[in-house]
Length: 117
Image 1 (tube, helix red, strand yellow):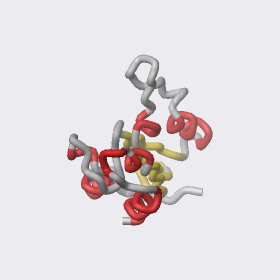
Image 2: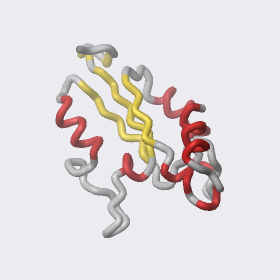
Image 3: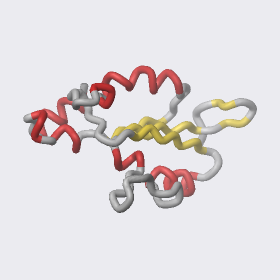
Image 4: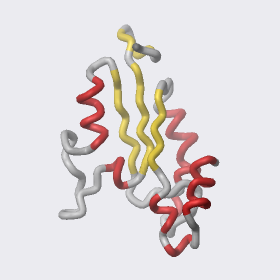
C-alpha cells in the first residue's frame, strides 16, 4: 500500500524521530552503527523500495525537557523536521528515556506527558 507521492513513483514516507537509539549510537566507539545494523536501516530493508525511511535521531534528545544543549528538546525541533520531510505518511516517535535523567527530576508519567504533548 502506498500513500505519499514522490516524483513519478509512489512511495510511502516513514519518519523515525528519536534519540540515540534512532541515531544508532555505538557505545563501543562513540560513532554510529552502520546502516545495516541500525534499526532504521533494517526497517528500510524489510519494507523495501516502496518505502522511504528517514532517520531523525539525536543523542540525548528529550520529549519536552531542556538539556544543557537546549536544541536537543524534541518538541522544539519537531515542527521544522515535519515540514522539511513532508509529505509524511507514517510517523514513528521513540523518545522518553532521556527524560528520566536525574537532572530533569521527571518520572515515567512526566515522560509520557511529554510524549503526549
